[in-house]
Amino acid sequence: MPTFYADQIAGATSAVAASQLGDRTPGAEITNRTSYLIATYTMDGTEVADDVIRLGKLRAGDLVIGGSILISNDAVATTATLDIGDTEGTDDVDRYVDGADVAAAGLDLGSASPGAGTLLPAALGTDEWITATFATLATPVAGKKLQILVPYVGA
Picture (tube, helix red, strand yellow):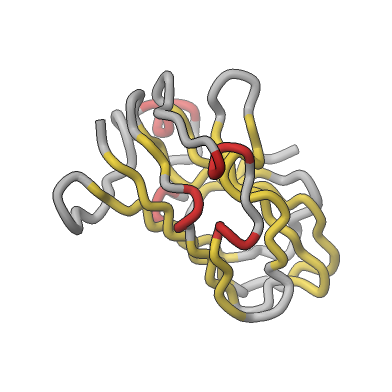
């Protein structure tokens, strides 16, 4: 199964380039210590259920605010549900969002499909990739986009 990357880091798909991404994908500093990981993914039409998109990397100690994750899309498939999680430990693919319906164009809030990490947030124990996984997917549409905004408090 291939690994996909958000458009902002798609040029870093080789093992060497991916390892040189640094400590974390830069966020946009908004207020105090709250930042946003902003990732855009363009569908290529070959995605299948259980494919993983690496959205960006956060540092150990960062606290993801899962209930405030925003998912915007422009009708990426006829059927599509998305989980958002991280690679901590055994890869908790739905730690923050569990089964958000992203088939129809629109905006989804993470708190509408909360994962366990949204209900009981905890700081990341190690540097981790924040990931989006297609829990279900049918007839993906090439060229359509997902944009995901992940708020977090930096360590």
